[in-house]
Amino acid sequence: MYPQPHILEMVQDKGLQKEFYQKNNLPTAPFYLVEKPEQIKPEFPFVQKLRKGGYDGKGVLVVKDADGMSQLFQAPSVIENKVVIEAEIAVITARNNSGEIKSFPVVEMQFNAEANLVELLFSPSKTSAVIQQKAVSIAEDLISKLNMVGLLAVEMFVTKDGQVLINEIAPRPHNSGHHTIEANHTSQFEQHLRAILNLPLGNSSTILPAAMINLLGDKDSNGRAIYSGVQDALNAGDVHIHLYGKKITKPYRKMGHVTVTAATVDEAILNAQKIQSQLKVIS
Image 1 (cartoon, rainbow, N blue to C red):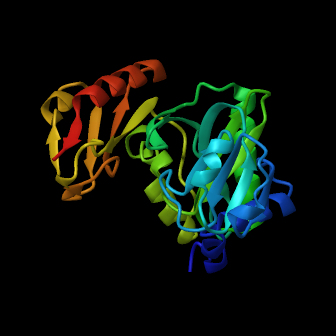
Image 2 (image 1 turned 30 degrees about the vertical axis):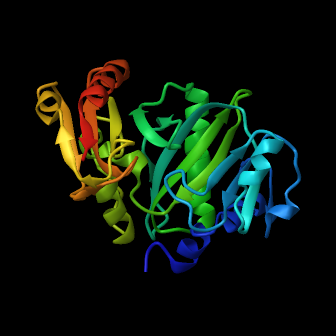
């Protein structure tokens, strides 16, 4: 079974993830583990992450001062120093059973501040070539040390002083790689199949720069999904709309994504932002 069950088990627990990084000299933010909130040291600011059950920004709490202590999760957690972040990036890497490894170019992500999930991403990243090479090396070192077969998404922080730190991982096709369907020679989905079937890995290089927006349910919507602005989006050029077939929309629920390709990454970002202002999911 690929990815291997012990890897799936580890990934379900953020504490086990962090311990693996620490034991294998993989860079990550300083942390400690607690079973209950009473064990948390009030050294502000810090981040509390539920060890299990968190997804799409849920299960993560940034505690800025003593007032935030009343909001703590009442469950086993990872406590991290709050990192001063210059950028948030991700690398999708793949490994087959023969040990061949290939990575997609680095993507850079922008988050919805209220929902704490990715709102827009673009590739190639605007971070320096040094940072991007460091990120790819970390992702490939990680999948190798895991001895994993399949596709691995590695989300990372870039700090103000140029460190690249692993935030968390997902051993599967991932939101940070959806743009590869249109923007790369091999999509993340094809690469995943190549990896688990032990076929030669495909060409992961970029055909065109791309930006991708997540189609999120409107914050005030809760009911049968209605998509407004689709016609305008389809008239906007190299635009590719992917709807996930979810009948019911909820506040900030991922309902689909839109990928925009262009001659430059700046043009792709600009076009994607225009579509983001037009294409809405309401009820």
